[in-house]
Length: 362
Image (tube, rainbow, N blue to C red; front, side, top):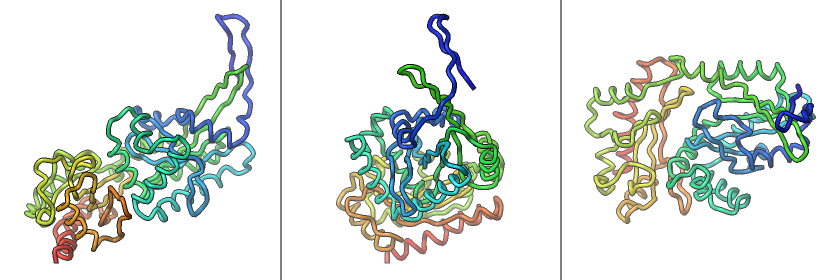
C-alpha cells in the first residue's frame, strides 16, 4: 500500500510503506505514544498509559506493561518482520501473563514493582503519573483494580507487529471465541516523509470479544446477585449500595463491625477511612469471586487492631507499608448455570464467610 502526501494540493508525493526498524525503537515509541495501540476501538472511552518497559517476570521481561483508566492491565509484546513465526508470539505473551499472575505475590508487591518502574522511567511516582495522565484527583480506584486484576489473572494481551498474518488472525479469533482471554493484534503500517513519521494501526480481535461479551454465558447482571442476597435475608450482611457498581457488589458484615469502628460517616471505598469491605466481583469474561479486602489508607488505631485480627487468618500476610490487601478470596462455581451460581454465592455468604469470621473472632 502507498499513500500520497501534498501541500495545498501541490507537489504530491507517493510514499511507499517501509519497515519500522528495531524492536527497541518500537518499544520506546509505544511508551511515548500509547495511542499507537487503538484500545479506543475496544472501548470508545478507553485511554492507554504505558507504565513500564522491560517489566520483569519469572518467564522473562514483558516488552511493555500498560493500564487504562478502568484499571485493566495490558501485556504488550512488540514483534517485527524479522520474527519468522508470529504464532509463537501469542504463546510467549500468555506465558508472561501467567508468570505475572502466578508470581506477583500479593497486590501490594505488584503495585510496589510498578511504582519503582514508573519512578525509574518517568521520574515521578505511580500516583502522580496516573493522576496527571488521566486528569484525575484520586488514583485509588485504578490502583485497587490493577491489584485485583493481577491477582485474578484478568489480563489483556496486545501483540504489535508490522504484518498480522492470516494464520495469527485465525488463531486470535479461535482463542477469543473459545476462552476467557482478551487477545488483540495490532498491524502497523509505517511511512516516513522528511522529518515526519506516519503510522496507521489496525486492531484485530476486538470484534470477536464484543460478540462474545454479549452472549448469555459470558455476561452476568449484578442486579440478580443483589436480588438473591435480599431474598436470602442474610441478617449478618448489609449491601452497601453507595459503592456497588456494574462490576461488583459490596457489602458489610455485622460480625466484622464488632472489631472495626463504625463506618457511618464514610463511603465504603478505597479513598475513605473504611477498614474493610466484602465484595462480589464479576467480569465480562465469566468469572465471579467473593473477596474480603482490607484498606489501611487513613485507618484509625482501632481499625488497625481489627485488621490485625483479620490478617492472622489471611491466606497471605501483607507487607510493611501496605495500603490495600485481599485477605480472603472464594471462587464462585460458574460452570453449572445460573442456579449453580446462585447456590454457590449464597453458600459462601451463609456458610464460608461465617466460618472464616468465627476463626477471626475466636
